[in-house]
Length: 271
Image 1 (tube, helix red, strand yellow):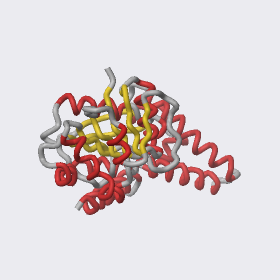
Image 2 (cartoon, helix red, strand yellow):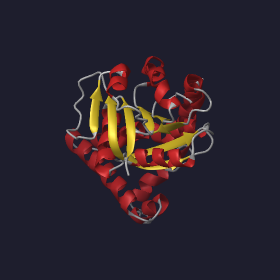
Image 3 (tube, rainbow, N blue to C red):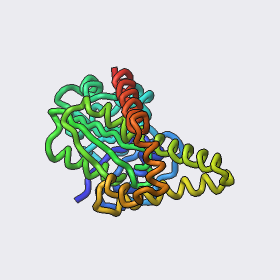
Image 4 (cartoon, one colour):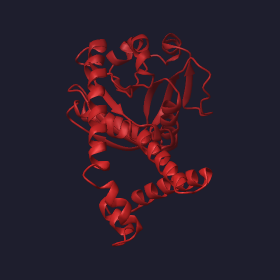
């Protein structure tokens, strides 16, 4: 049986989650609070509201949602989130996908007895290929955590951590990871162009190579190191490149510094 959800914000991420919930049967009813003109699915389970007041007026008598999913930008949270205190007090869990907004932030809004779950997805979630990690406060029940897992699985894979401090590393690794991958495409294409390839061809080759390698990694049971070795012939061209990339001053120490810097910045932003 599906859940009754309130979805606050239906931009790219909220819209992707909504589509996944409907396709997978995770929701029997979704009340979407979206003041903009974002198109919503033509589905009898979806009910649109301009704001929290119109939502409250439209809900059936005694309706108690299972979850309030907050999918608005972090800078909008102070203005938006307090309006859903009544739904939380009625027993709905809070599922937030806003970066930098901690469990303590929501406990400050709704009280320490409120069930709060914080999820950190990444942008490929918008096409169902995301990697999300969630953490729950002590008030969240096993059933509520399981519901949050199902809801986030609509956008890709989901992991759970018990220590909220690890969300900063998650933000650094998978949250920012798509940008690092896009940079890799840029760098490979630029290097190919410097080696003599036409710019357009170099970009197409770099882009398709990263897409294909990612698909192979997803489809294969072998780990990344084994897949790398499978491509590398002893004494061949790939080995020559890897000797540069895997040198003491190569890609690993560079990524170590990058992830550490992003993790530290995430901690600063979370206060």
